[in-house]
Amino acid sequence: MSERITLYAKPNYDSPIGADGSGMTIAALHVAQDSETLSSAPMRRDVLTHLMSNSAVNYWKNTKHWLESCGKHSNGKNLLRLTSTGLSTCRARVSGGADTPTRPEIVRKWINDMRTGQGAATEPKEFDLPL
Image 1: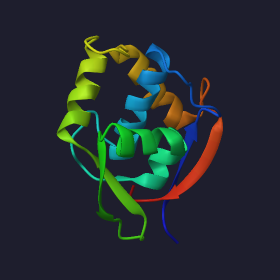
Image 2 (image 1 turned 30 degrees about the vertical axis):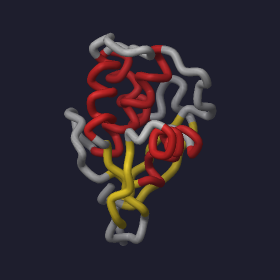
Image 3 (image 1 turned 90 degrees about the vertical axis):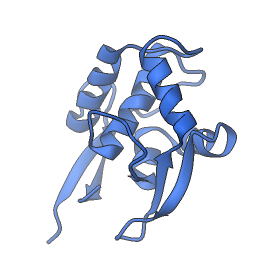
């Protein structure tokens, strides 16, 4: 039997997004990478779609080019990774130097909520490990 993890998402993605929504988006990237430091590491699209939304993932990929396809996971799921522009955008947002800034404490809160189902992250979905 494979190991599984439950991740929790906010039922609705804010549009337009403010500091909280920007923090939620960046937190989703951290959770999908299972890392405290963002990089160009591959992330499962199904995980990102659950934690953000399909339209947000498509916007980051097709409109802004902050995400790009990078193959398939061993389980057959599509993989995405942050582009160099995407990484720069995330850094700028967390440091307050972007059009849609956020703060590190907001990102940390969303990471915790996505892993535990607390706060506004109330929609559970199970995923096979490894992410």
